[in-house]
Length: 116
Image (cartoon, rainbow, N blue to C red; front, side, top):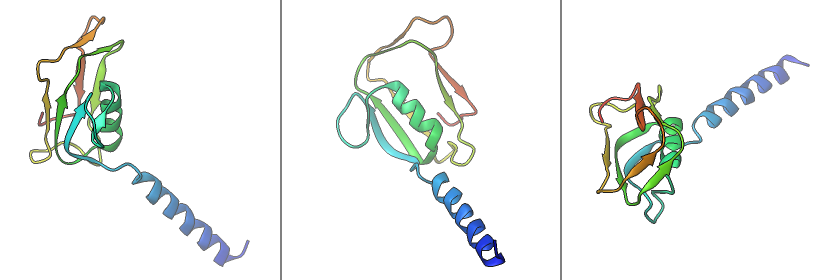
């Protein structure tokens, strides 16, 4: 393989990892669990997966519009690239809805997440 081909291969590899790392848009704005529209999550698990994977780029308000049952603890983990901060906060509004779980520990755990 000639030098030019190697340089091109390295460049394409770097480009791939750069693009692949940014495929998930960060959360910012108002979201619902059990609502309708583009900022809707069907369940707590869906929200937690998105939050942990994507992080935040602005303040996030989560409105809970339905009762939910889970079988394991929900763990919100701090995203190292896009964490919650003093200005990029997470607010959870339960709106009187109930999250049920048959587990012995806390239902929602926060690991490396601040400004809630």
